[in-house]
Length: 422
Figure (cartoon, one colour):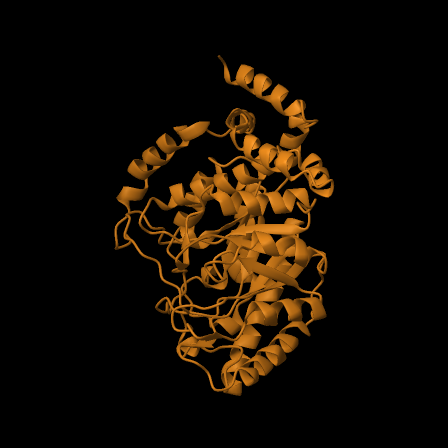
């Protein structure tokens, strides 16, 4: 039986429930995922005076083939994108600036340091998102940045964030799609603090100064990202979820939820419907926490499916900006991007092939027996045949055949890289 024949049979199964599969696939291809560049080089970046990775971030593993230059990183991204259906975005950190060998401090970064990224994005029809980098720097060595007691340190990071927003605005103007510029800071304390309020007062004041710089929202959207704890900030993080959700609501900014930044028993999927009642837009960084904020490669697990269901069933595909954030150096990095992004798209497709309106009505009617029965039965509906057809239609490998492309790329390109540049 051909792939098309399998698709037609599967379509009929979903059509019995009023689901227009062809329309679903047209809708799906217009949902961009923001793919994080830092999976490709283990969050190293290209600064001339490169700092040790800090801020409670750790990348484990030593799989060969890590990107060492902007050209290598972009080539690896191109390979991954060729294996992922749809048109997507790429998310950059400030440490991925290209300064032609000149040591440029982060508060002095300008759009010109990202011209090569913009040129590349134009060539491939990609949007770009951005993040100021408030870690891996001597001025963040004590774990405090925008909430630092020293005004000079705070001023440095304030100026870096302002410069980053201008870079995001540049991306939006050049690429015709607004850039999401997201502020995450590592600030916190390892042990129980004696004063939780004062650092948060300083953070609020710093953010107010950063956002006082007028940036056109047609080109740049601002987001703030919370965290529960991290290495070195186990007891207290200044930028908690409550702090940032309140700040975002009051100041008309996007609240960004990282799926690895909450208590291990919390689920981000459960937060989306509540937050959408009060926010026009939300942003996500999707990762897979294992015991703690370990940022494993995204798999098609229960929480990822539930996350996608909450977005789809609440008609929020245009309200939730989906990005990824994981870094695994124990496996092929191109494969990591491919696995994680394909799984995010699979989860969205799965959610779009569920009779959500019918299930909502069953709940309203108090028919919990039929609701549960159908929710379980749809887990084994012929979703795979629809996914395979979508991949073929979008010109990317079907099923696991993409692995052969990655293996060949590893042999042709990745294994030839060594620790010393030629």
